[in-house]
Amino acid sequence: MVSNNADALRLADGEIARLIKGGAEHPLTRNPLGDGQLALLLKEVLPPDLLARIDGPVGFEFSYENDAGRFLGRTSRQGGKLSARLTIESTKEQSIAWAVSGREAAPVTNGNGAAHELPVEVKREPAPRPVGSIAAKAEIEALLSTIVERSASDLHLRVGEPPIYRIHGELKRDHDATPFTNAAVEAMLFSIMPERNRLEYMESNDTDFAHEIEGLARFRANAFRDHNGSGGVFRVIPAKVATVEELGITPEVQNLCYLTKGLVLVTGPTGSGKSTTLGALVDLINRTRDDHVITIEDPIEFVHHSKRCVITQRQVGMHTGSFKSALRAALREDPDVVLVGELRDLETISIAIETAETGHLVFGTLHTTTAVGTVDRVIDQFPADRQAQIRVMLADTLKGVISQTLCKKIGGGRIAAREILLTLPAVTNLIREGKAFQIPSVMQTSRKLGMIQLGDVLIDLVDQGFVAPQEAYMKSTDKTSFLAMLKARGHDTAFIAA
Image (tube, rainbow, N blue to C red; front, side, top):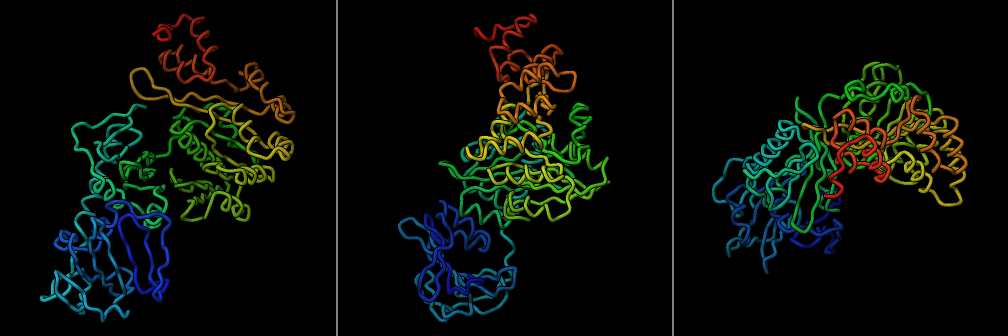
């Protein structure tokens, strides 16, 4: 309202926010306010005694933190719909009488910076920030701390449900806790959500952000709305970056970190540990090379402190507009290594390939489940008339694909099964000639060079007693072949009949 020199701001449940300027209304948001969202916003500026009376007409005034001046507001409810109108004290609205509890009153001018009912008969001390916000932040941070305590990977907040944790790959409800109301979920989300994300959430009904509890961990968050109301999902990001040694990443994959140019892709479904693997690879580069590493993420997950390398971490939406714009800008920032958190669209993929081609080492992620599927996905992103050119460029730049999935370990915990494709001359030729379907044959015969297919990784984990046959079968992509391997090695396959 201030930056647009508007006369007033009008908010109402079920309607888009509107600015009023020169007697005309101008839309401020694309999407209407959700049920109960206006009450949540008013909670930020109204003391509890006024908040309890917003079902009736209430006038109030408050000061904003940026010294933009004092604001005058009034609420009303008609037909069950809550609405509010706000103006700046210096506007002509100051001279308008305010209806409060059926009587006329003028705005207050006592200047104490607190939210007050109008008229004010007795001066009061400034109202503190609503306790609800502080309590909500304490509650959400307690739940986030529980993720770490229970060795869970995710927390789900849903209306009508208690906290739900993903522990060793399975969702577990905390039946000792009280189910959340919509107001409680929104209060918790808003208490830790950056201002930019609040605006995005109100406009598009979902947003991604990160939250850190000092000394404990960082959390990647997604807030959304569904038919039940507001919801949120939090993924824990350990404060300490795991090393390649701790993750059991093979020497052949580690060697990819010493390349001076090329494209390395880490792929897998959501929740398969791609970020953890990439974090370990960047940490290895940070410990062993003297280079400039730029990461482009949404949001920033693992925080890397410069060791031998200089690390620049940029968050989409906060430090840059998009992956593609940040990637394009990175070329002018003297990079040696570039990590792209997600290759989301054709243009981003195209720039990533060109960046790798011009003498930089580029790491990226895709949501594909096999190495061969990754090659096909990249090429298929492009129009038919460009695919031949991209096939040649990809053949020259692709240095490795790590496709991984997480399996439940016998006895608890999870373990990563990684399919590894390294681009030997034979693989390069197959990509260039459009014969990616023959790549598995090369991988099968090149295991001693560090390549391995997912089925072979899974059967090794079963043989070593880390993973149950049924779990490995569920994670395999070629189930017919994998079942034959299980039977050939004498493993129990009774679960198939069941």
